[in-house]
Image (cartoon, rainbow, N blue to C red; front, side):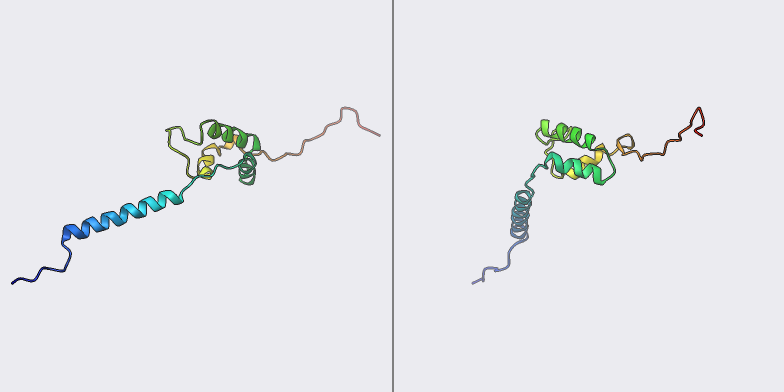
Length: 108
């Protein structure tokens, strides 16, 4: 009489690994719940990175109006990453430069 093999077969191990991967993937998706930022958070993020707050408002409106999906229709998972698209040189805060004052008539 032959004794049944207690070791799992290759197919059984592969199926078990696949089930474990599916469970892990499901857990990761559940962990990544997106919470949209407030307009103030976006404005502050722009300002802290040297960009004009107004463009932060524009970026916020763009994504907020689109229900926080990107241009391809994908849900936003990381809003700060999406805001970097709006970080362009023309949106940077310009440093104030001293103005040269000239007088047409000298003051005595």
